[in-house]
Image 1 (cartoon, rainbow, N blue to C red):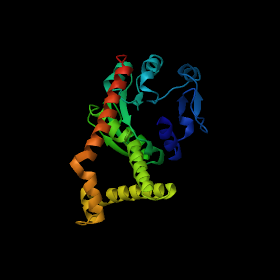
Image 2: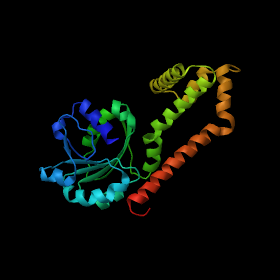
Image 3: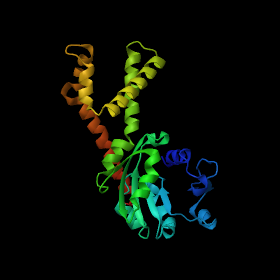
Image 4: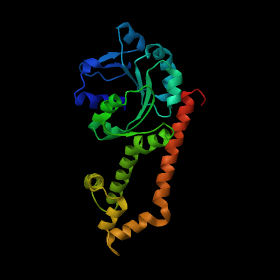
Length: 257
């Protein structure tokens, strides 16, 4: 995810000379300094006003011990780590100017993402908003109490939508479409429907009602989807499982798992 965000920032005009990546396995990018470790970055005279954590949550303890002395006054500490709370960040990086949790999704790669944001400390809200603007929409949260659910809802959401599209295409194949026809039609159908929803300002149910007619083919299909609330129950179970895993990862990051 960190790589997708960086690629979008660079495409939107961020000067690569202002960026340093600390990751021994990172993909090289033109003009972006690449360091194998924090020690290498510090030895090269590295300083930063903005530091973003983009590794696995389980690696937080290892990284924090080396990074905390460098994340001092004036530094905005940004984190996209699932399950790692603002309180956790404040405990690990107490000298940072501010701790900012950002939960993006993969569509940030093309500037169409959704990023939930929560802040602690003396964060420059305008600067944070400007930083995130090229990535897509931003939703500011009063605190990070709901972040595990938001991570499941928007962060994991694209994967769930891709799986729904895949299932829709597979159903088309079972009923006679070729694999290529089914996938192209499914992607176009979902893309057009979501674009219409965003543009119309109407609720999904109202738009569905405009497509359907009493006793018609669309209504028969909707009746199957709506039977006993099974679709809502399925999605609730999906989101609950993802949310709960986020909480488990948070415990692991704190050394409690």
